[in-house]
Length: 138
Image (cartoon, rainbow, N blue to C red; front, side, top):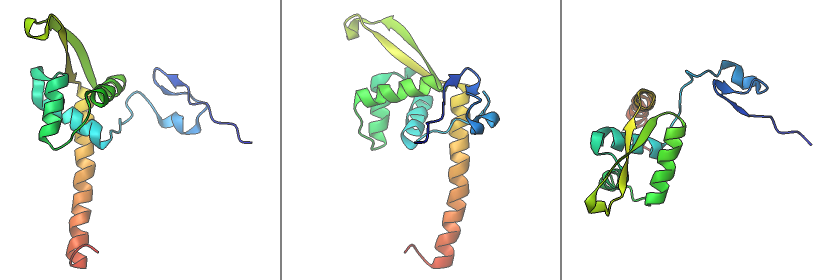
């Protein structure tokens, strides 16, 4: 039976016992999924008003229904990747003395969005050519 490779994390990338990790550094691209991209865009658009409920409302405005739990799981994952940061605001009376957890897109998050958009743009050009040459989608 084949033994699984050790993919233990190090601060600067993957462990060196993974042969593919030699090219991985702290400046490696951070690939994001479609929902992560939408969450990053919502946080970026909302600016200082980005917290759980407002992010959820922004996603619903883009016709994406999601539970608050799924949203916070995604925000936690984005924070672990270093793409967003969070902090607790001041407690407010309208929230019964509870504080809001605010989010902000980090520079690495903005770069990940830019890279995702560039990849999409390249594919759109190819997609447009495919439609032009075939006369439509099959």
